[in-house]
Image 1 (cartoon, one colour):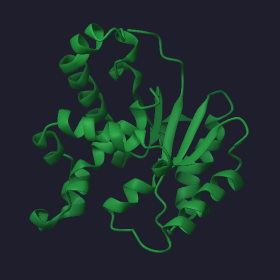
Image 2: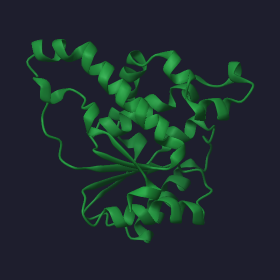
Image 3: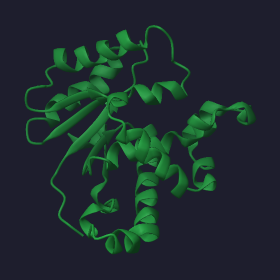
Image 4: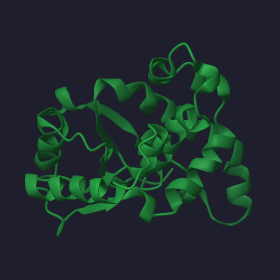
Length: 199
């Protein structure tokens, strides 16, 4: 497996409810992480669809989160700040991961159980497949560090499982196509660490 360059990736949903907790719990730590790391910070607007946040205000809320990143001290000249839907590879890789991941894996996700509640039959497929999109967000860039809150740690573990299954299923095909092992997804590249414990 090829060496992975250290890279931090994380994102914030444009929920319209940016508050002190977002700043203290995430964005302030993003600013500190940029001092010694290459960083990609994303406004995860595709994830907001799973929370039924699609409305006329989504573009302005997306800009507001990006503005909050910059106003908080993230240096957009040295690091990447963008909105997820502007990069089609997120959705494309998520579809591939949807075909690799198992429904049983998704059903075990605590956050899905919490958000779907007792009415799981009426929950959207997007809510169930949310972790595949998160895995794609991380692995499309081969991120090595993913600062998240405690509620997302289970999704990071699933990202490793998805990457490992992808590699097991497709490594031979990738080699036969002449692309070599470097193009495979690197499950060992994802090293989860909590925002609370990382700094």
